Length: 287
Ligand code: FDA
Image 1 (cartoon, rainbow, N blue to C red):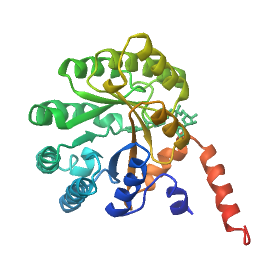
Image 2: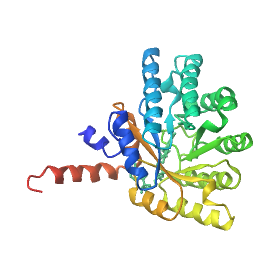
Image 3: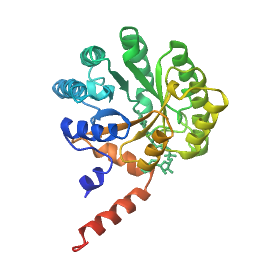
Image 4: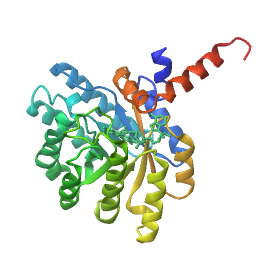
């Protein structure tokens, strides 16, 4: 049952399936960011295996004529084991991405990793791979306004999202309206001064606000992109693309889909009823 639920949000288990989902989106003018699911790895061999999947993904995206763009979690590359190991794995991925003129986004994990991820990004990767890597900021976190200013100062590429992790009130706004208010503030700042920000949300009010804001300030649609998750608001993805905006879809795949699925269901419990309803309809004989 969980596997069937996952299939709405996860594009299969293999690189080939993910590349084929990306090609399908590319036919509609939508660009991809492929994500091999996995996090909190505690064995060196598993981190190396995940790195090798990323190396294959990059090659296969290029061979399929897709824009080469992937998202990766540092704990999947061994950050919990040692920073050196993580650096070695990330360097291999970034060297290949650079050779293929591609881009690697460091996903942001729970707040235990925010400082570590930003330090790793700005001190260990950014200098060598400036045009080929970027990071994620979550509007749920109280610290994010300062982080955005620092990253704008660096000219680093930022994806802005609300944040998918349950956090203590000391570090994150407990109230959704504050998360949304902060998103709007950080989004405006990135649109005005950021380096090709990724506006990652399905929130129609915020998207409408972005469209209004860029028009008001004469910001060209070449200077930013909208981003959404695979399987979420496909109607809105198509509409934005048709309206002339860059639209990127984050495409997760792999067999470690359980934590990812749980985060998607927690965001919108109505998904459970919706998907279960479909499954029941599909399983009724004769329909
Ligand atoms: P919100 O949750 O307020 O939802 C607004 C509306 O969008 C809902 O009313 C519904 O219509 C629709 N919607 C949202 N989620 C849905 C779902 N699961 N199913 C169906 N409809 C849904 N987080 C993180 O912590 N670190 C990261 O690195 C990333 N990376 C990332 C990349 C990209 C491209 C996206 C779009 C998102 C992320 N996220 C993330 C996840 C993000 O933090 C957040 O949890 C989700 O995007 C949901 O938040 P919204 O901004 O969509 O708003």
